[in-house]
Length: 205
Ligand SMILES: O=C(O)CCC(=O)C(=O)O
Image 1 (cartoon, rainbow, N blue to C red):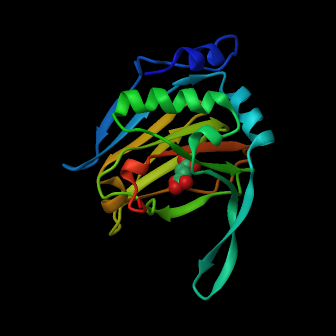
Image 2 (cartoon, rainbow, N blue to C red; image 1 turned 45 degrees about the vertical axis):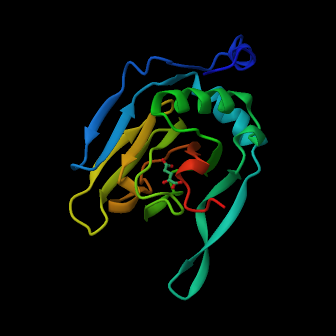
């Protein structure tokens, strides 16, 4: 449940989420995995984008490419404890997502795509249970979000607008991979917020 104090934090600010998830559309990817798209779930998402761009602890991370380390083409800010994330709207959003999906979201991983040249390659999220529910909230510029079976084959391409929510469920992280491709057309800043749960982590102690 969203606590009274969290609701108060949300009042008077322009950013609002739809507590009824009325626009949700669930797509069965196969018998065990699904993707839910909730277009326009968060209104006035630009205010949250601006706040996070300014206040999150952005880092430039490296990744291995064959034999050498390269810079990831995006910035990252990680909050192992959601309550430590810099904008209280994220805490209320986490609570609303927990209520809808029946998972206690208590951490967040933020990605900042500076422009159309930033991207993330095909991958599945690491450190999650085979079966899990992973909400990803998009803020700012419209980008494509693609998903395909791990072994290859046809990909399904979706448009992630600012304020949209994509939720990967079932065995999405075991059997499927997803990516945000680079764009040729100019695009400005986008932030995605990926909500995590200790209850869905393989790294629990
Ligand atoms: O930015 C997105 O929409 C996807 C983020 C993502 O795939 C990830 O952080 O693992």
